[in-house]
Amino acid sequence: MRFNFRPQNHWRFKRFRYRTEVLRCANCGTVNVTTRPVCRRCRSRNLQREELPERGRLVAFTTVKSPTEEHKELAPYIVGLVEFEDGTRIVTQITDADPEDLKTGMIVERVLRKITHDGDAGIIIYGFKFRPPIT
Amino acid sequence: MRSVHVVGVGYTRVGEHWGDSLTELMAEASLAAIEDAGVERVDGIYVASTFCEVTNNQAGISALVAEALGLRSVYGVRVEGGESSGLMALMEAYAAVASGLVDFALVVGGEKLSDLLPDEFNSVHSMTLPYDSMGYAGVTPASIAALLYKTYLERYEVPQEFVAQFPVLMHNNAEGVSHAQFPFKVKLEDVLGSPEVAPPLRRLECSAPCDGAAAVVLASDDSQTRRLSGQAVRIGGISIRTDYVSPFDREDPLFMTSVALSVDEALLRSGISRSELNVLEVHDSFSILAPLILESGGFSSRSESGPDVKSGKYSLGGELPINTFGGLKARGHPIGATALYQVAEVYLQLTGRAGKKQVDRTKAGAIISVSGFGTIAGTAVMLSGEMG
Image (cartoon, rainbow over all chains, first blue to last red; front, side, top):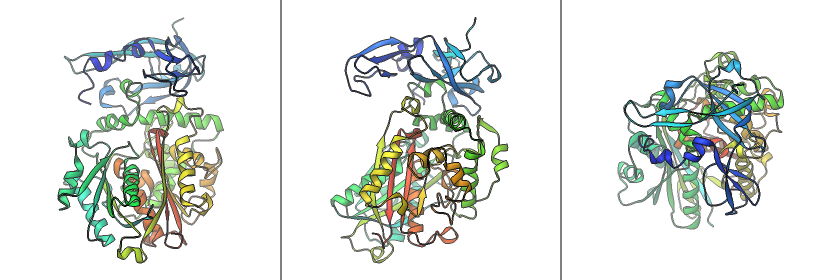
């Protein structure tokens, strides 16, 4: 846990965390979320970077009332399962909403937010969350 | 391959052991198992601890355990596989004894979690999830359990008590068990009225942080121990499988392929069928995991584990009693030690030493261990002397 806040440990995931960039397999179509040399399904090396759509559908959600040490300042916060048009699913924080504002099946959109920070003087970690769309 | 037997078991009470270090707990459990087995030597020590680097700043822990046992120069290794670490250590020891590399193996699991504050425990527990895509963003194991729980209730259109009755069964079984963390009964309304952790998941549907250590001694049938004359339980087969790390990347998040494959393979290796099992240990770290395991493992039809619990199928005295000493919920879940508590408890059942929790005519039992909602899952089948 102590070493989580080294800048490079977040910088190397910037494509996914800042704009949900994933690797789609050109052979079988599978989306691989974190970077890797071969597709998890067919082991093809032909993986292409792709940004997931900015909008998806909220499939299920819950409120985290018992948080981790790094996220306790934010608790309670909402964690949701978001599904995109192609069936890809990610687990993400849902922000700018109370649980009462949310409905299963509703559209949510990506937004860049602060995720956590390393004390008062350390780095701030940013990443995507999803929220009900601002119309 | 030589056949491999569990010839003795030992364990500490699960709970808060403020005065004992992790190494001391593992040494206590190990000495009890060695004494129970009546063996005069140990050739290899297999240590399971999932979080000892983080909770105890300790790497290379197998040497500390060996020294604490007075077994200088013995072969020692530590095995880590998330919440299935204990079963993985068992499989490594099993392979070594079966091959002839080792005659007498000590397998010991231990974890020390009660020193942690609740949010620190959640951070440590979250390490069993993929950190780079989930953990960093505050996704906790309880929140994944809650998403699966909601999906289950919505898909099968069943009320929450279908799932929430599992902790009631576990506490019933743990009542009066001297090594259990929570040896008392709870009512369904207690479970449903306990604080929300991540709705619909409630506090009494979650295993709790704790300390504990459990150990078993393995020997081949070529080795002469007093246990092989009657108190030996043969390991029929072990299987461990991995799967995609996010349940939501799998075809069906409610079906754990790793559980299904490992149950089938362990039974095949044992040469018995599901219906021949008399007792089963399932990994109920969260209430929802019990139905998911029973349904993925083919013990209940999809969506039918709730009615099966209600009908008594899984109770003591039922067709297939599960978690006869309370399971992860009530006996407790000292992560790296958990699968070895499961093995020790099935051993007690198969040797007629389960006391008030004894299931009649037990000849075959199995344990199912799961890490990260099926990221890793394994099954070990154990056979009594009659079937061994």
